[in-house]
Amino acid sequence: MDALNWVTKLHFKDYPDDHAFMNAILDTIKKCKTFIGYGIFNDYNFVSDMRHLESNCKNVGLLDRYTGVIDGLQRIVLIYRLYLTKSAI
Image (tube, rainbow, N blue to C red; front, side, top):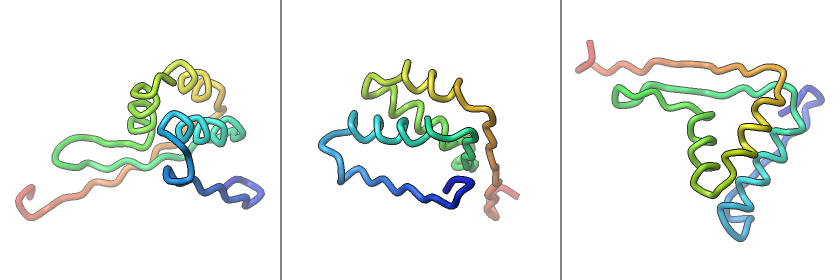
């Protein structure tokens, strides 16, 4: 959702392949000034939206485009949440 309450929903099944899907995601992010991502600790590893996005772009040959889009953002906000289980306490 952007500042004007516009919502963009993308689903991989709506695209012919992963490359087209990742391009659509990057096209959407490029329109924004701020990226807000979410991250959690899972099995003692930090996993964030940005890392998944970067990895998926790399897998389909869009790493340079990803870098350009992310570098064009004015702000990046990452929200973190720690999950603890009884075994971790």
